Image (tube, rainbow, N blue to C red; front, side, top):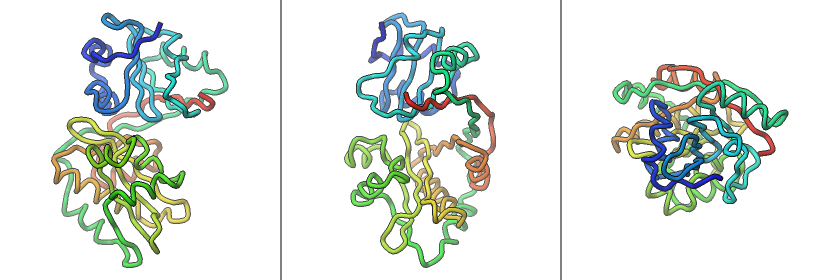
Length: 255
């Protein structure tokens, strides 16, 4: 049987030393949920937030195939704690599973050169306007598929206003790029950056990212960056982050 865990201290040791802010969001009960094979003495657990599931402890098939009723998406990124979890996930999902590499950056709160970031922001052409994500722009982000993830993990603007923060770039009153909080944990946020296809390779993502980092630093929040691919990692390095390690994730199509 699978249980939703409300006393997260009961599962904290299973995720011990996993340096992942999405897990921290769940453990801190700010965002996401945790499920396990026992309420008080679990040996297997998963933290689920947004499109991500992190599996920890002893591999447990029932947990791998469990889909909460509230989870309606058909795509998920599963992150195994070890090779045993990886093997179980790929066996259970078969051709629905695609193994990928993701890139973590080091968590270094004092690493950012704010003058460098301000120079990047100042490079924005006057044909564009940069603006914080307020309530109208929150709804505009949600209205288009490419920009939805900038705000989609927050149930409404009230929650986003309380826990999130973000930046968008406009051209002709249309959002063309943005950087925002994919998730929130006590000490900071996980960054999400998206740019409309026809406006990529113009430096807009760098500008959004630089401004969001500056805004986070003003609020004493750490802007964590987990890179989906090498392009994202390269952008992170441009903004001041340092590569930490590569890890395995499994994309599930038809979850």
